Amino acid sequence: MTEHDHREEQRPAEEVRPTPGGPAHEETGEERPRQPAGQENGAQVGTGIETAGVPEAAIPELVIISGMSGAGRSTAAKCLEDLGWFVVDNLPPALIPTMVELGARSQGNVARIAVVVDVRGRRFFDNLRESLADLEAKNVTRRIVFLESSDDALVRRFESVRRPHPLQGDGRIVDGIAAERELLRELRGDADLVIDTSSLNVHELRAKMDAQFAGEDKPELRATVMSFGFKYGLPVDADLVADMRFLPNPHWVPELRPYTGLNEEVAAYVFNQPGAKEFLDRYAELLRLIAAGYRREGKRYVTIAIGCTGGKHRSVATSEKLAARLAAEGVETVVVHRDMGRE
View 1 (cartoon, rainbow, N blue to C red):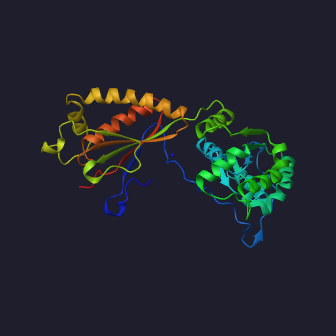
View 2: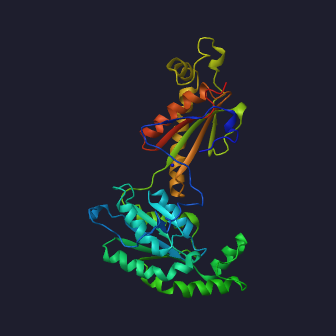
View 3: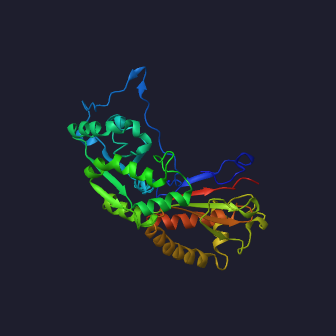
C-alpha cells in the first residue's frame, strides 16, 4: 500500500521485509495514472475493443465516476483505488474503450477499471455517449456513479478552498455550478448510482462507496511497522509511535552489540526483560481497538513506528514480533527497519 526520512541520501537504504500478511503501500496523493497517448507508433489508436482471442471473462469491469465539481469525485475515486481498482483521472471519454481494451489484454492483471470523467475534459465530453454505446455493444459491464450536491454545499466547499469553479470564467461560483449542471444533466439521468453528498463528510462518502463496491471482501487495514532510532529523528509519516527505551539496551552487552534485533539471541535478551512481553501484549490489544476505529473512519493505511536509541536492537526485535502478531490477525503488514545498519 515510501520515503521515511528526508535525509535518504545520507544513510543506507531501508530494509523492507514483507510479513506473511502481504504487502502494503502508502496512501496515494491526488495524482493518478495518466491517460493513454492518442497515438501509438505513429498510428491512431482505435476506440473499439478488439476482443478477438480475449476471453469475455478477461474484459475488465468498468465504473465511470462523474458528477458535480466539489461533490466528492476524488474521494470516491480514492475509495475504489483502495479497494483494488485501477483508477484513471480525467480520461477523455473517447479513450475509455481503449483503456478497457488494454485492461482486457493484461491477462487479468487489470480486472476492474474506474475512470473519472468531469468538465475538465469538456472538449471531449460529447464523445462520452458514443463511447458508452460502443462499450454496450462490446458487452462490457459498466456502471456510472454520479456525485451530486446542493448549490449551497458546493459554494461553501469552493469558498473554503478559495478556488474558482472550473466553469465560472469571469462570473460567480454559482454561474459555474449552473453551467455544469446543465452540461451533466443527461449523464445524471443515465447514472446507475447517484450519491448526494450535500450532508456527507468524507468518511460517510467512503462508507457509501464501500457498501456499493466492496462486496463480500471488506476493505482491510494495511500496516507498516517501522523500527527507527530516536537519535536520527522521528519518522515524519508515523501515525503511532512507541518508545522501547524503557528496556535495557543490548548495546551494552559486548557479545550482543555487533548484532541486530533480527538475531535470535538479541530478541531473546530483549523479551526476557521485565515488562517486555507485557508491553507487546497490551500494545497489540490497543492496536486492535485503534484498527477497528480506523476501519470505521475509512482509514486504510497505518504506519506504526517503534523506536529505541539507535534503531538497531530493541526497536527491531519489537517490530518483528508486533508485525507477526498483526499478520496473524489478518492485517496486511510489512516491516521497515529504517535505521538498522546506519551505525
